[in-house]
Length: 210
Ligand code: 5GP
Image (tube, rainbow, N blue to C red; front, side, top):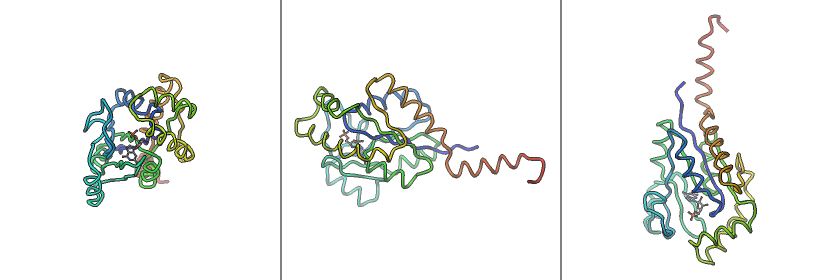
């Protein structure tokens, strides 16, 4: 059976450890493509344009919206974030597992459009207090931005029921194994087309007419 690409949406509050976990599993899964988003937010220390995000101006982003270049886009913490359409479709065609690090709005757009090939997981800290500590220790954001992110996290957690899995990241090694298992199962999911062609193939091997 010809395998099609599958999608794995990863969401969760900034500071929950999503990026570190994603970087770990990218090393261990074959035939995978990480969707690099475009954003208008300021680059953090250590971030690289074209690797972490494509950093653009508000005007450039709005131009790309007009041109229909995004598969989905959303405003998060007052900045634009969007997923480019072309590379995602190319990766799906190539049978890859496409991994997205996007927010709850993005998850709902992707799920609506690609329901049968999408798996989703929400990654969070055990508590809001722990999230606050991690954001403070990370030292990359100002007090105001941390407050905005905490507020946003409270809103996002209300939509956790829209996800297939919830991963509480309190032990990095365990969380990595969990996410790896989810990513492997996301690859095993069968699309509607794959199920139809499998049933056809399977029946065609019968000697008798059924
Ligand atoms: P951060 O600024 O911490 O990198 O990301 C802030 C939030 O934006 C995170 O929840 C992240 O998952 C989300 N995000 C990043 N890229 C995209 C995107 O392309 N689309 C959507 N909808 N959300 C995104």
